[in-house]
Amino acid sequence: MPPDHPYEMDTQRFTELMSRFAPQMSIYLCRKTKMFLRAFLCDICVIVDSEEKRAKNRKAEKRDGDWTKPDRLAEGYYWSRVEFTETRKVLHWHVLAKFLHVLDTAFLGRIIQNGRVVRQEIKCGNIKRGKQEAAWEIVEAGLLASRYVTLFADGISTASFYTEHTHNPKKVINVEKLRQQYVQDYKNDNINMATHPLMQRFCDEECEENKLLEMAKVATVFCIHNCIKRICGGDEKTGDGCRFNFPKKNLLHTVPAVMQVNATQMEARTCSRVPNLNNYFLMYFRCNHDVTVLIDAAHKMRYATKYAAKSGRHSELLNEVIEYLSQRSMDLIPTNMHHVLSQLLLADVSHRAFKSKQKLAYRVMDLPLVRKTFENVDVVGFYRRSNLSLRRSGDRTIVYSDRTEYSAYAERCSKKNQA
Image (cartoon, rainbow, N blue to C red; front, side):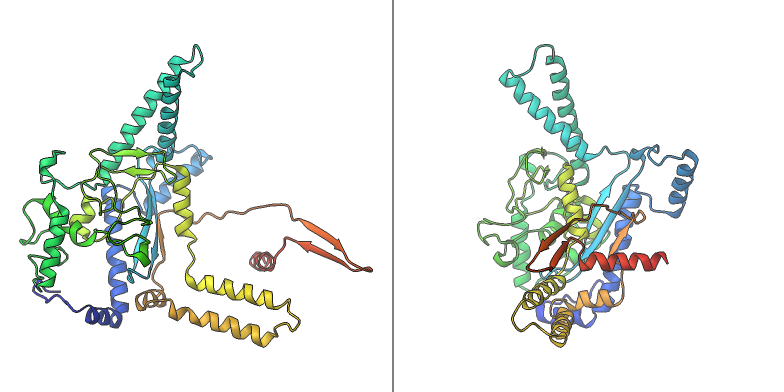
């Protein structure tokens, strides 16, 4: 696209163009995201994703004979999953990454929590005699871990905007004021290379000479969260009830919030309406994003399982139909096979009402839903099968078992694969 290409101001017209060229936009955004994620995670963060590295690891495991012996600190990996939502329409990615030579953040979070608990017990005088020195060592380890996590979080994410590399309150960039200026330019149809950061590249002459101010302008346009009641649940004026906890509290320093249910970093913040941002994303990718350090093992697992097994409205509808048909089967006049097939067929084809054209185009072209730097790991669970016998009148006996139709189908498929 040439730099002087006109900016489409009509939202309806823009939506029509996006729908018309949905396949092309899906391919473009998929490839662009792949290139940038690999550049950021593999080149900048040095998470190596190559066949040479995998072959080297396999040789090391064969040589040592024990997969637990290699140094886990020297390994990095990432996992990402694409998702489409009602508000965004186009694709966005959820990524979990483990950096090389970085201690496990969940382990550090536990050290920080232990240090805080022991420090409180010292204040209350609940430490046994002879254990004071060990207690102070736990407190010291907690303070060191807290400092480690804080430096690591400040190194990859930020929510503060200054005109210089400082924490001087006099040098703070007023993001809200820049936002008001952008809104006024939009109302006046004054959208061009000089006023819209999206139309600029990092090397264009229209960019600000001060890179910190340039990143603040990008955050002003793309990363401001305005609450919408039906989307995030927050009040449009006060933000009460927002599921993303906006507006956030401004802080002078980063604090590891281990005491929260979802333990995350409370970043040093000068703007209450922006998420945790990354300088490389702001400068080069110029998109909305959120980079957060997870310092709690439970939160990490909840996040991973939530987005790895997140079901859409289509599967929820099928579950409702199956439940409805199972209830009808107990009626005086049970449903016949024709009715069951009709209901399931209608539920199966109704997914078109839930999918946007962008998502439909992405799925039809079979573009990747998950990208990761490790192989699939099959997990098999074994448990005792339970049976319950219930005797009825006469010689009739009903046997209830936890072996469902789904498990029976899975066992049958497993047998076919083995054959």
